[in-house]
Image (tube, rainbow, N blue to C red; front, side, top):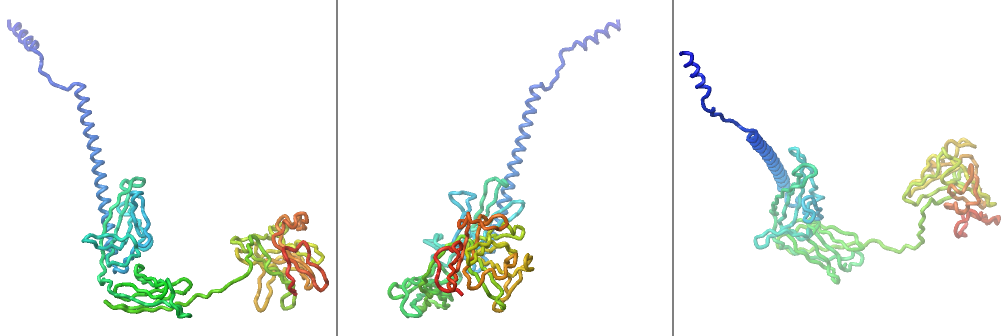
Length: 451
């Protein structure tokens, strides 16, 4: 009986109604994960924006500090040390259609690395004036000084690093001339010719310290007048065809001083002659006999071009770039070998060839010689000593030929002459009646004796 009751109690507990249990389905779990991911991504994006904003704020603060630093440096200068920008350049990094003007000469652009950011600092100084309480820049830097100058400092940087767009921060300030007095000084004077004492029309008088203070003389009377402020200035008078003159004068307030100038005319004259244009090496001198023992002869060449010209070298004595050719009174040409101290004729320079080769017969050097107490070192000499190549009193000639003017080991090539001629000079022997060698003649000869 007791056992049956126990069994009923057990089944009574087991068959109790459904259990009240709670939990998440798979769909709910996925939605929750997605929401958490969106939140994390939003936080990351917000962090990036915050970081970019911090970096931008840092860059702008550094740019402001750099601009203020430059402004303070300039403002500590005296008024006349802050020179007006007369020829501005323009930076197009921000806006090509509205570029930033700056001074490329007096206050040159500065590149500064600060806080791992590269900044460019530009300075621009203008003359300004006050019109109805408003400061207005004057674009013309030659305008008479108003006593006020506007300083503009622009600091540029790339906000996103190299390759990104530029940002700019600009500050401005006005500096006044503490010594400014209204332009109450009237300077007058006359500019005259120092030789004729006559007035010089259209002469210009200006102030070196202020390019805006200037005046031109009257076309008939040669007098001028200008308004300026008191002070000590250098006045410059100039006119075409005259040397300029500078006079220093101190002018007091409300004064009407007179400052006259006398200008010295530049020398002038007339030159007549013939201008020759040569684009190749030319023969400037042929000297048959000179030296203390009359044993020296030389040829001087001249290079009228703006480029050096190579003649040859000791490595190619049998095939030079330019061959010296000697003509005897019988009209026979003889290309000569040279020993070279120098291989090149300098631009607008000279080159000397002499008969001072040493040793005789096969020169390996060129001896110096003396003329009028001056030691001459030739650039080249005959490799094979010929004694006197040019015989005084005989007809003869000397030519320069290109690589087509000779064959083999410097044999004269008559088939390419005179097309292979670079330059040539010839002379005749009037005493013996020997004419100048035809092959060496170039142009029309002169009849003046040269011996």
